[in-house]
Image (cartoon, rainbow, N blue to C red; front, side):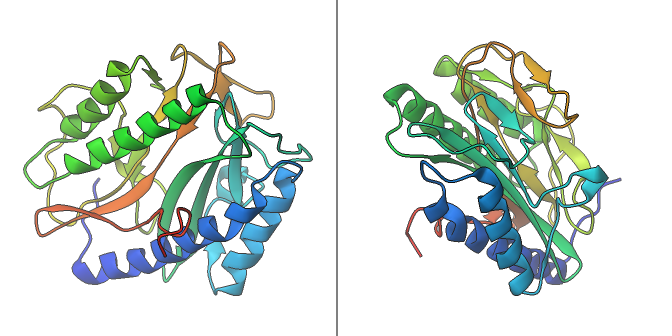
Length: 255
C-alpha cells in the first residue's frame, strides 16, 4: 500500500532530510586518506543525536551502525570498520535520519584524495542518472519512466545497473511502497500522484551488473571487483512535479 503524504507531512520529512544533508556535509572533511571508516560513523551518529534526531539505519533489521560505508567495489550496506581510507578510494556513504516521526534517506559517493579519471567519470554519470530519474518523477508519469531514464543514461555511457537493489517509498517507515527500480520500460508501473514521497538511488557499476553478498550478511559488492557508485535523494511530488527534499549542497560547498 502506498501512503501519500499531506503537505504538512512532507514539511516534516523535509526537516529530517535537511538534517541528513547537513550530516553528510559535516562528515565530508573526515573522508580523507588515513581515516578509519568506523571513526566517520561515530562522527555522524554524534551529530545526528546532538541535533535531536536518531539514525534511521542503526538497529534497522539488525544493522549495527549509523552509516553504510561502501568503498570502491562495495556497492551498498558496507560496515564501517578499522579500514583506513586510501588515496584514490571512492567512498559511498548512505545515511538515514529519523525525526518528528518521519525518515529521510540519502547517499553520496565521495572522492578520497586523488581519484582516477575513470572513477570520476563513473561518479559523474551516476549522479547525472539520479537527476535524469528525478526529472521524470512528475504527476501523471509512471515509475517506469523514472527507471528507464536512469537506465538509459547509465547504459549509454557503458555502465551497468544493479538490479537486486532499488529505490523505495519513504515516510513513517524507512522502506515503504512503491519499489523504484533503476531499470525498466517507459509507461510501466504505478502512476505517480501528488503526495508521493520516494527515495531514488541509482547504483551504477563500472563493469558487469552481477553482485555478491559478503558473509557479514549485509555488504554487497560487484562480482567482477570493479568500482561502483551510489547517489540518492529523497523527493516528494508537490504541485505536480518533483521537489528534492535532501540536498548535496552541504557536501559540495554550496551552503
